[in-house]
Image (cartoon, rainbow, N blue to C red; front, top):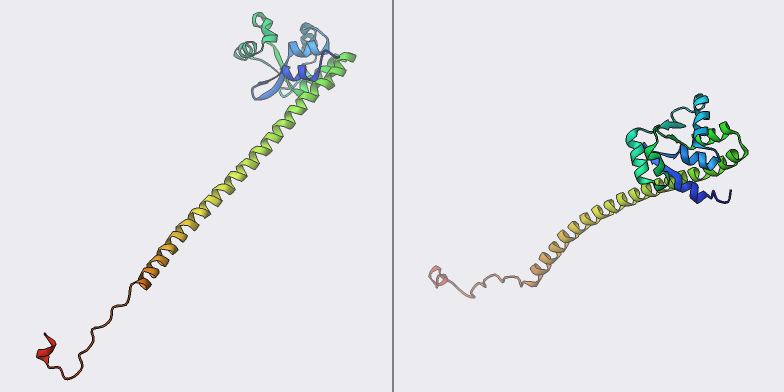
Length: 187
């Protein structure tokens, strides 16, 4: 069991069709059986493996998995398409094989799946918090823009008022003292 550390198991978990899965060759190795034996038991117990537990890879998916994962390069020339087991399928396979090693390793296989799910959930929560923060920042920015516009308008009014106060009032023309004839007023 020492050579089957959780790090090894986590490195075997792939994402195919948007699901976290482990390929049958890796699962068989972890459970201490041959891939042939695992697939024999799978064929005998297909009823235990609905589509959300296990599915067969397409040729394109197989090529992509083999190209991206060096440890399963030998599958490139295999005639049959490999099976991909979800978390539930890995548990079901351990129960189906029923060997002590398979049952023990089933527990160790499930833990990385759970850890990856928890990471995904925490990342989702973080994304939601970031979205909320972005909305609040946008709202604050909008409020600040409105405040700046209003403040500019008020400052312009204050400056106009100060300029009016700084200009001395025009004094009305003084009326001459004494008797003024209409002819005198035009001079």
